[in-house]
Image (cartoon, rainbow, N blue to C red):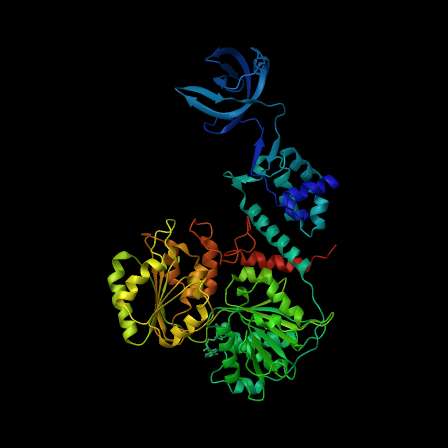
Length: 603
Ligand code: ADP
Ligand code: MG
């Protein structure tokens, strides 16, 4: 038992199904071959008729029992054992790749097989083959698989795969049969969801919240979209519970109107307090302004930022702040805690905000907002851990024309940039690096700076390590024409006059990042352009990207291209990698696996 535990640890597996999902990479089949197939591994009955040494190599001639044909074999690594084994007159079952040379059958270094008719799985792991096989023998039993909640077909499939009787039973054209693959996809999803479900922990809420949102909604200058409304309704149901604090993540593209969901939630929490944490002071300020604009004046809003608070947070109904919130020791207790653009915070920061305002066993309702769309299947899985709502549409269609361009288009690009600036619009140029590097076949921000400065006035420059980043962005928003930056501007700040973005070396970036960057332009409905500048002559991935505008579709595309060998950056949700399951395609399987997990008793 203890030994098995050690082996499990080495394999980095934690459940019986993890073990069952270690699938043989191939099988060793010692079933006698019925015909002679060239180029394939064959198992044949043979008798030694001649043995000789040639250039230090052992050459054996066999007579094949079934066909009566001759076959010659060469052994390169010869030991006395080989001489003894292949004595003239001895009979064997030989196995090896059958080939033909000038009409003579050949088999290089064949093995002499002791037992025929046996199919042995080959596992590629960090363990010895014998160790894996013995784990399989002990743990992969029908009984154990049924206990995990699998049905008879799934159990049978896994038993076939690990303990096959014949290769035909499992393979079709050298691959697993298609219904086997389907079962493996299912088992993978089922196992993953089961583990997640085990991890969810719920706490009682500080209190149930049911403040009215009617007047707030009636006073908005627009009607909420269907999806905004349904997410708000979900949150209403969450907050009305006292025995269970809400734990929800609202995922929606940039511009999908998440702020209105935040404000509606603040209304529900009244007369109790809400806190919202945002990743940058710019964003916090923007949220503060929107809250003041849309919430009834009777709602007291305060802003907490390093060194520059607005309003008195000890009195406020709604406190908005940056991570500076985490350092306030006298933060009042809130019944609702929210985090905007949660993907930009570390897990620790999010947890410490929640902890800061929790009281003993009871917790505030907790809602996070993310602008990184994830595939629906992934959302379905994640919703085992916390509830997930998706906002997949935006209130108004944004007109952003995306185009892949290269060097020859540069004069046209310059012309276009001039035209936009003449119309008091702004332009953003994204460089892959701040300084020159031999690794990247594009100019860096510093190398190009001089060129742009010679052509344009009101030019601003910033990058990730720039301490003045926020100030530069704020000043650019008011006075700038053109901004040179690295991917850092991937922040939620809105630059309403920005209508043209150029991404240099676009093929180097993940689609999620490209999409975030593209989301910077056209925020106020102005017609906008996103140019993907690339030296790569043809890039299918970028072509697909130019045709796709919805973030959720991009997330799906990203999954498809993940193994395409493009250089991807770290912003893609790393998530779990699956061997059989395809998160872009297998929505049905995931949803079925969820149902099955729910109906599986916990043993
Ligand atoms: P997100 O935070 O999801 O990126 P915002 O909440 O900032 O998006 O909304 C983007 C813009 O759309 C804002 O100017 C907001 O006032 C506006 N907006 C939000 N909901 C609607 C709606 N239902 N109809 C029209 N405009 C809306
Ligand atoms: Mg937002």
